[in-house]
Image (cartoon, rainbow, N blue to C red; front, side):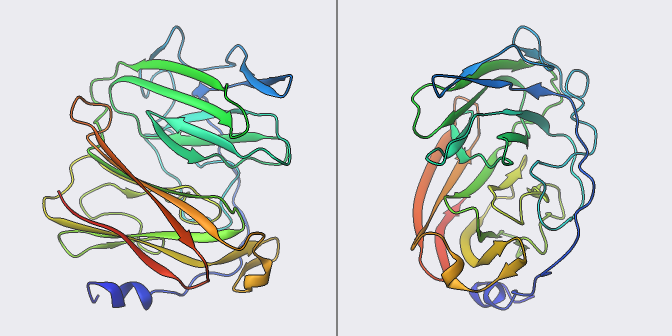
Amino acid sequence: MQYGIDAIKNNKSRIISTHAKPLILVSGLCLVLSSAHAVPTAAQPADGPKGGWNYSGLTDRSTDNNMSYPTPPIYRGLTRNRTPIKGTIPLTDQQIPELIVNGNAMRLNTDKSGHFERFYAFGSGSNSIEVKAASNKVGHRTQFYESNPSQVTPHLRIICSWDAPEAEVDLHILTPDRQHVTWSSPLLKEGGGLDVDSVDGPGPEMFTVASPLHGTYQVYINYWGNLDESGYNFDKTKLKKPIVTSTITLVFNENTPNEKRESFIVPLRKIGELTMVKSFLY
């Protein structure tokens, strides 16, 4: 494979239609949200860590195979060793729910009833979760301690989120050893990579590596096309807003004293647009 910008531009084939596989629900860190004067407030969790304590693989069944909900439009397999975050949030036409994990904000996509289930690879130690709607100042917050010492802290995480669920936006990561990580090749040979249930549909897309190789990384995003009930399409008139606003967050040494975070706001105006977000030396 050619390494660099041309390799990204030439990698455009994608399945246009498929039928969904059954969703596998797992118990875990559950957020149950209810409505009080249109402000999400916390209710008693239905399942999950008690008293702010969690032991991955024992109390949250994170070792089970799992998939986020709403399910992606294309089935690319299941993932394990991620802690589930699930619940229901009241919705209005003006609200865009948001999930904030350890300070990392991303759009929270739900079904029509406001139900969601997301998965996150937490490291050991103290972790925080908040679910809120953009129009509200108050959301559901929880803090828990991951006590499983074998849970490895992600030293590099890249999150791509965008504000138009009908748009298909793709992360492209070029690694120091000439690997090209994207929707068609989401996993790194040495472990880590993109969550396979985040590379299709409304996102967010998440790239996570516990032990990154040293060298230069390049981060791109591509506005690949649109998605509706009939499948993928390249009709710009079906986009509900003139500009798709994407947020790309780079997190180094997450949840440690050496944590560093950078966020970039990138507007996407037309289908096929490819944007270099960041080149950095790890």
